[in-house]
Image 1 (cartoon, helix red, strand yellow):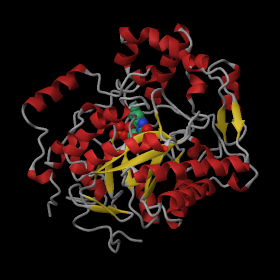
Image 2 (cartoon, rainbow, N blue to C red; image 1 turned 120 degrees about the vertical axis):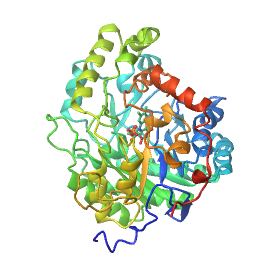
Image 3 (cartoon, rainbow, N blue to C red; image 1 turned 135 degrees about the vertical axis):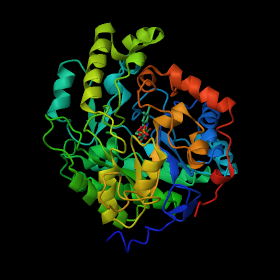
Length: 463
Ligand SMILES: Cc1cc2nc3c(=O)[nH]c(=O)nc-3n(C[C@H](O)[C@H](O)[C@H](O)COP(=O)(O)O)c2cc1C
C-alpha cells in the first residue's frame, strides 16, 4: 500500500480528528498509554481508578488504556498492587469507573495481562517470603540466562511449564475476563502483548521452545481472540506487538523488527482491530520506558528500607540500582522510539496502528499522524504516516489532565522522562510524578486554569 492511496491518510488524520477502532468511535487521536494505577482489589480499588483515570477523560483524552490487570486469581502479577479481574463480582463494580469516563465522552479499554515468568515471585523478596510455595507459569523451560541468574541468587526461578490444556485454559481466562469487562461497560480490550509478559513469552524465540501447536506463539493470540469473541462478542480487540530489538547482546535468539511486522500482519488478518508496536528487550528492563536513570527515586531516604525488603537486602538493592544505572545508559530516550517499527507495521496492515514511547511534543505527534506539515517524523524526507493514534504514558503521571493543554494547541508536555515515577512502584508506592520542579510547574498551571477543557478539546475537529 502506498501512502497516497492509503484510505487512512486524510486531512483528518491528526490529533484532534476522530478515529474508529473496531466500530467504536474515538473523539480524537490522543490516548493515555497503559500505566500501573496500583489500585489492587481492596475496598478503595474503584475509587483509586476513578481518581487516576477520570482527570484524563475530563480533559479530553480520546481513549484511555487502563494499566495491566491480571486475568487469574493467583500468580501472574508483575508488580505490587496490581488489580486482578478474574472475579465477575469485582469487575462489575468497575462499571462506576466506566460510567464516569463515558460522562466525559471519552472511551476506556482495559488491558488484560499475565506476567508468566515475569512475576513478583521471581524478583520480590518480601512477596516470596509471604508466598513460599509460589511458582511461575512458564511457556517452556526458562532460557539459560535466567537459570544462571537464578543460580547467582539474582532471581528466584520456580517455573511451572504449561501443558497444552493449561495453555488453552489460560486463553479462556483472558476471554472470561474480557466478558466481565464488557459487561462492566469497557469499550474495548487491550492485551498486554509485550513488556515480557506471558504473551511476549509465547511470541519470543528466547522463551518459546514448545513442541505443541503453541510453538507458533501467534496461535496463543489466536486462541485468546477466539475466547474473547466467545465471551465478549465483537468488542474492539487491540494488542501490543513486540520486536525484541532492544535485547542485550548475550541473547542471540530474539524477535527482529521484520518478525514483529509479520506477527502484526497475521494478527490484523486474524481480526485484531488495532495494534501497538513496541521495540523492547527480552527482559523487564528500561527498554520499555527509556530515559534518565532515576537518581532521585533511588536516593529517596524514606524508601531505603522498602527497597532493601523488596530486593532481599541492602546490597541486593544497591546491585539492582547499579544495573538500573547501566540500563539508563544503554537505553537513552529518543522521542518516538517506536515510530519506525509502527511505520513498518502500518505499511503492512489495514487496521489502525497506535504509537507510544517518548512522545512529548504536539508537532511531532502531528507529523507521525500525517497531519499538519507531515513529512515523516522530522528527518526531512517525505515519509508515510507512522501511526493513526499517539499515546503517552509517564506524561500522565506528571499532568493527569494533559489532553486539555495538548489538544488546545500547547506544544510540549511537562514530563522530562526522568523516571523518578517508576522505581518507587517496586516498593508499592503509587504511580505519580516525584520531581518537585515539575510538580510545582503543574500546580502553577493548574492555578492559571490551563487544564480547563476548551472548545478545541471538546470533541471538535480542527479541519
Ligand atoms: C510505571 C509504568 C507502568 C507501566 N505499565 C504498563 C502496563 O501496565 N502495560 C503496558 O502495556 N505498558 C505499561 N507501561 C509502558 C507504557 O504504556 C509506555 O509504553 C511507556 O511508558 C512509554 O511511553 P512514555 O514515554 O510516554 O512514558 C508502563 C510504563 C511505566 C513508566
